[in-house]
Length: 304
Image (cartoon, rainbow, N blue to C red; front, side):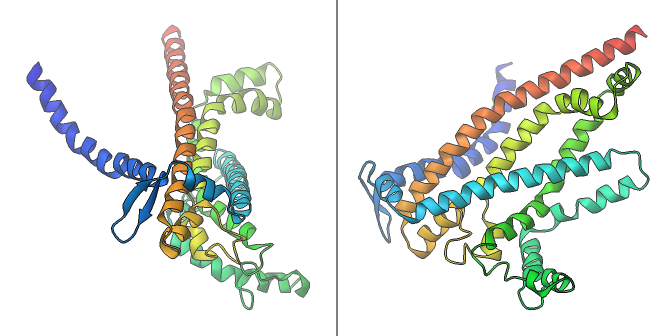
C-alpha cells in the first residue's frame, strides 16, 4: 500500500514542480519586488516597505487607467454575456441548420487574438475601412477615426474583444441549457405557464450557477486583457484606452521601472485571489446541484 502511495506521488511530482516553478515562484518574486527598490541590471533588492505603493497611488494617470480598466472589464463582461446568452438561446431553438450555425459561431473564438485584432483594425481604418465605407452610404458625418480618437478608441476595442470571446460563453450556456430536464418545462406548460414564464421561473434559476461562474471568469479575463488592446491601440491615443495590463507592461519594458510594475502586478494578483476564492465555492455548489439533478432524474426513471 505504501509503495502505491509513493508511485502516485512520483506521477504527481512533475506537475507539482511545474506549478511551483511557473506559478508560485513568480508570484513570490513579484511580491518581493513590490516591497523593494530594484537596482538594474542585476535586480539587486533593498526593502523599502510600502514606498512603492505610495508612489503608485500618487501617480495622476492612475485614476484614468483605473477608470479605463473598470469600464473595459464591466462593459466587455456585459456585452460578452449578452451575446453569449442570446446566441445560446438561438442555438437551442428548434430551427433548422442550428448545428451548422453553431460551428460558424465558433469562428471568432478559434481565430488567434492577434489575427482578430488586426482584422478589426482594418475594419476601423479611418480612410478606407469597412465600417466607415458602410457608414458613408448613409451619411459621411457618421464616419470617424475610431481607433485614433480618444472618445471612441476604448469602445471600439471593447466591441472587437466581445466579438472574439462571446462563443465561449455560448458553448457553456448551450451545455447548461441542454442539462435542464424537459420534464420541468412540460410540467410548467401543462399548468398554464407561458414561454416567458417558463424562461423566467425555470430556465434562469437553472442557469444561476453557470452564469455566476461565467461572470467571475469574464471579470478575470477582463482584468488580464492585453493582446487585443496592445495590437489595436497600444493604449492610445495617449492613455485613453490603456488598462492595467498595458500599464504594467509600459512600466516594466518601456520605463524599466520594475518596482512599479511589480507593485501593480501584486495588486492584480490580490484581485485574482479574491475572484478565485469566490469562484471555488460557487463552482462546487454548481457541481452539487448538477449531481442532485441527475440523481433525481435517475430515481424518477427507476420509479417509472
